[in-house]
Length: 436
Image (cartoon, rainbow, N blue to C red; front, side, top):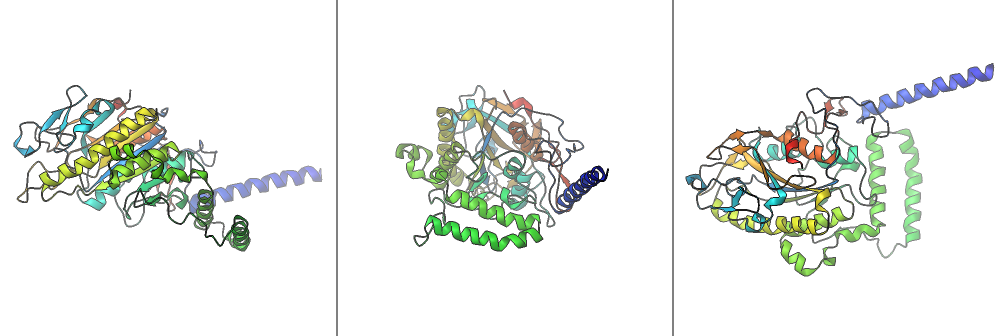
């Protein structure tokens, strides 16, 4: 009898401890849904997508055009209009789809691409617009929202346990990164794709045995503190060190070594940072990194638009067209969603400096691969390229479409440390018609 009561008491006590532990995690960090190892209850969000989709893509290569790309001079030309200035339109491999003359290589790849010509943003300044595009939320001083790569890691497993889940290639110190998620979901930042990873080689003074001994000593010294203060921010440091050691010891570091690529292929991508960044992105995805962002800019052409845009398009054209053909040749395009995004477009009006100014009312982004139906155009701008004429796509809608392709639960609510609810793409609705 006493034994039975004691066992029951222990079970009740264990249940109370589990409840308190769960509550503490909720209040101190972020809760996750029941499909993620049953750690929390799934909570559907109001006015969000109820779709339970099967993934069409496993990986994302996200190409970000910093500064606001001119849609009229790239992906949405208006033949015969005076707003076009010196820019002409050319035919493409997609029936009825024309793009700018500055993208001749991409004109042959448009049968792989879905253009979103009715993008519209509420943010007309660079920092705010870039933040909104990457997170679906407006910039606030009180909170940092996760970027899409962090959401992917939060909901799904890494592709390679010894490499980062997300890599950011470019020099963008204001990238939202993991936002309010744990720091282990932050991207690995690289400014130069050709430099490889820094500080991953052990000093010649340390043998493998010496290194292991020092790690073991550090672990013993830290253990009491970690057990006393079992908080997310404390655990984050341990996670960071563990990930760093795994990466240092991984044979997969060769993924970062562009010298292993054929010189002719490197030339096709372009020897500039963007082209080599695209090549590195392909290598990383090939080795299991599931979200790679490559930045390229600045497209902020207030001055000399018709000189600068052709120059930048030369680099973009080589890098993007080669990336698509390379992925296809290797059988990787079907599972890799290639996204090209920018914070806003440029005005149809040409200013006194032969440039175009900020224009968030309408602009163009694109997707290719990853189950996307190529040779398609969704939405349209008006005859001047000034505002949306058909099927407006908001920033959250566009990000919901990326999330949909990845099979992310768009209506799953996660809570910030201040107990505020958030979803992958706010209240965005995915554009499902662009998928085959």
